[in-house]
Length: 212
Image 1: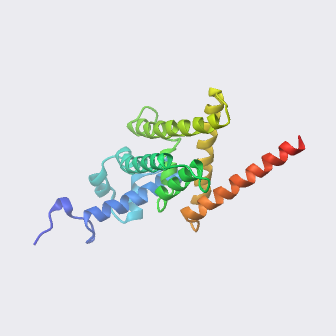
Image 2: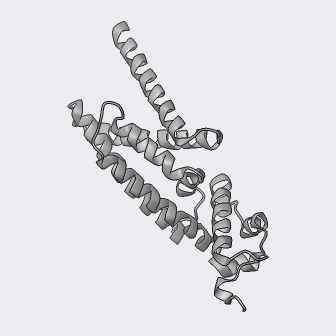
Image 3: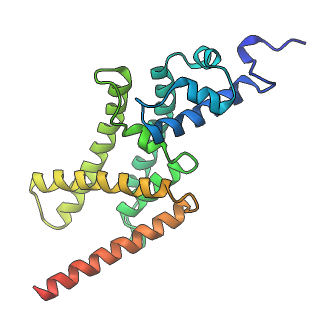
């Protein structure tokens, strides 16, 4: 019995499985090299398929990027929203819950965060607009969370909130970049590390208050 061409893969691999392989390889390429430096040919070579076949499956390089970006963006938004709506606790405050959700959502595909925050996307392209949509949505969630945090300190300065949201995004990106280079670190280990770093930061700030 002949397998329908719509489901056929290459070298005996079903098309759905081959597409997953392509997306995994492309996500890593886009994340590590950036959109501008990534080529469809390099992705095809990594997976062991021809460039024409990859184009047949996904279309242009921009289409391939979007196929990598969309599931990642949706997964991150779901994870962050869920973490932010969970009840706060002394054991794991909102910031740590969000970080744990972020690490868990990216586990096994850590470069995906860098795909979302790719600075080499062509301006005014569908890729840049879609990435900007996800970044704005994540920034909106960060702005809500940081504003709530500042309200607990009775700070109503909107510039304080904006600066803190900006710093939070930079912190998340820095932590993920570090995590990419330490593949042995699990999401749980990263969350515990962040808890220790936050505690150290509070200790340092408290010591500064005592000196002042």
